[in-house]
Image 1 (tube, rainbow, N blue to C red):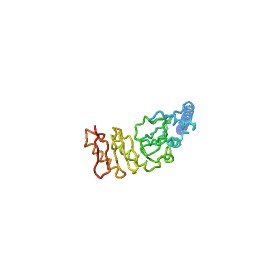
Image 2: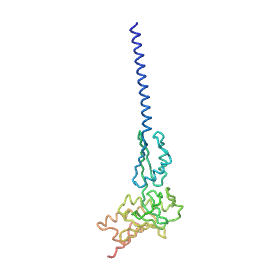
Image 3: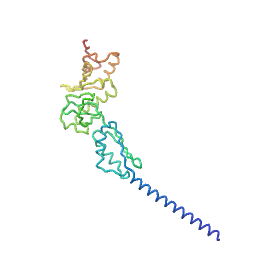
Image 4: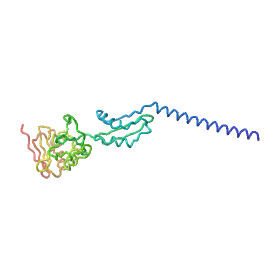
Length: 253
């Protein structure tokens, strides 16, 4: 009977010691975490293709006064960053104990709309912020489109249907016929509401008309393949407006 009581007392004592050890460890961990939060400065890392734009993103975050990682709202930061007119998508993540990582994919221009001021457009027709100098952009110029400023709200998609259709065409050419895209100096709308491409080389004029544009681009691509090693710049103009044929005028040397 005495042995049983002793075993019982030892068991109770062991459980008590175990509980005290666990409680002490919990208190120690809490104090360690509290001290760590006080001693650790929150670091915000912004990953973006154009490093020159980082200052504008930091300026968005500064008013939040973020100091502690557990008080950071990922959703709030994501929304604020994605409201920037250059941002296509942003991903925000927490890395304990003290880092916030923001990964940004920016919109990049695919064409310049010829109006005052010049308008940069991406491959979805979104209007990008004005740049002080657009001369370093080697992009197609879009001419003779509606120049009403209200149609081109910065950070939003252009409201001109003709502009969006032309951007869609340029995007497809860039993806499927890169050589042609890189050679386009100007895409213009003629008085007959038809599309004309003017190439950098020499230059060459390509008349596409106002219908079956995708098909005509495909025909032009096949024509250029068959014409190798020469290229379409050997012609002063190419008229694609007729069914399944190209009317071409050779350049006089």
